[in-house]
Structure formats: structure tokens, C-alpha cells
Length: 142
Image 1 (cartoon, one colour):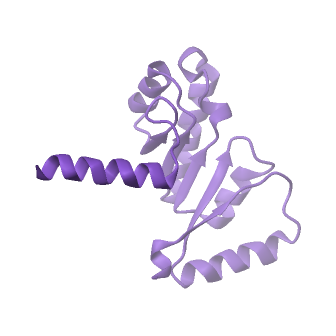
Image 2 (cartoon, rainbow, N blue to C red; image 1 turned 60 degrees about the vertical axis):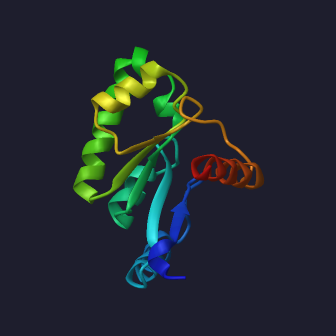
């Protein structure tokens, strides 16, 4: 499998010790063709610093920023700021944890690249998803 089809996801629950070595290793992996995503942006220990160092292909905005964004102007301002950072870094933005139409509307209004959450679909098992996919194909063929 080509490394360009693999995205390594960095998530920060605590500070990264040896940040210099970490950044070096990420850059080496990127030169090999791997893509990099930064998860939990807006909730991690130092995600903005990581973004400026890593320059990820994908920035995933944490659900804590998204939940209730339709009734909280500060959260929407945070989103706009993160979108500016992403644009500067050349990153695609994924908003996580969208649970209602109001939140989806704010994301659409702000032109977020991609969104995921219960509002769109509930998680499913791979087996059930494959069976459903086969059933749909069978219906289309008949």
C-alpha cells in the first residue's frame, strides 16, 4: 500500500516530551509520503503549537468546540480562528461531533471542509456496513 493512502493521526492528551525529535520524525514520515492529521484541536495540551510545527494535512476540530456552537458566539469565533490557521497551514478541516442541524448550519456557513457526527450517521460495525452495502447493490441490479 502506498504511504500516501495512510494518514497518521497525532492526538495530544499531555505535552509531548522531546518535541524536537517528534517533529523531526513526523517530517521524515511526510517525506516518505505519509499524511498527517492533528486530532482534538481546541482541546489538546498544545495543539496550536503542534499545528505550527507539523503543518498537518488534516486538522480535526474537537467536539468540545463544536457542541453548542450554534448558541455560543465565542465558540464560533474560535472556529473561525482555527479555520484561518488551517488555511495558512494548507490543511483540510474536519469538524467532529456534530449532533444537530444548528451546529451543522454554523459549520456550513463557515465553509468547514468536512464534518462528522451523529447528525449525519451513527457509527456502525464493518460487517453490518458491508452487508448493507451488498444489499443496496443487489437492489440496484434487480
